[in-house]
Image (cartoon, rainbow, N blue to C red; front, side):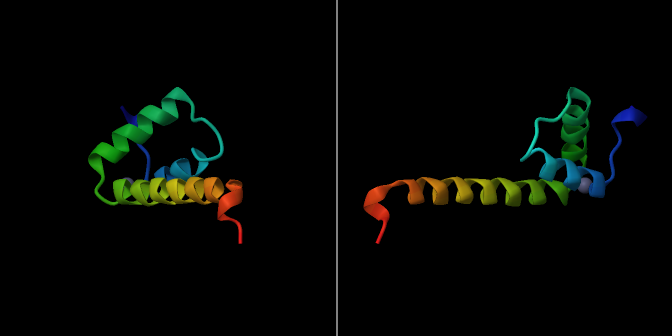
Amino acid sequence: MMILRRSCKQVSALLVAREDRSLSTVEQVALRFHLAACSACPVFERQILTMRNAMGRWRNYSDTPDDRP
Ligand SMILES: [Zn+2]
């Protein structure tokens, strides 16, 4: 399973890249493998997901005419 081994640095790069493009199957599996074994990267993943949700909410908010000043 050496081919699926990723460093924390590589995994954080994948987590950021995932926001812009869809990952390949190997990347997705490697990511899941690492997240299952690492304690730091799942925290980073949660931060990215929180940020994405916040951005989505902000975008919806600006699209609603009633919310404009
Ligand atoms: Zn890690």
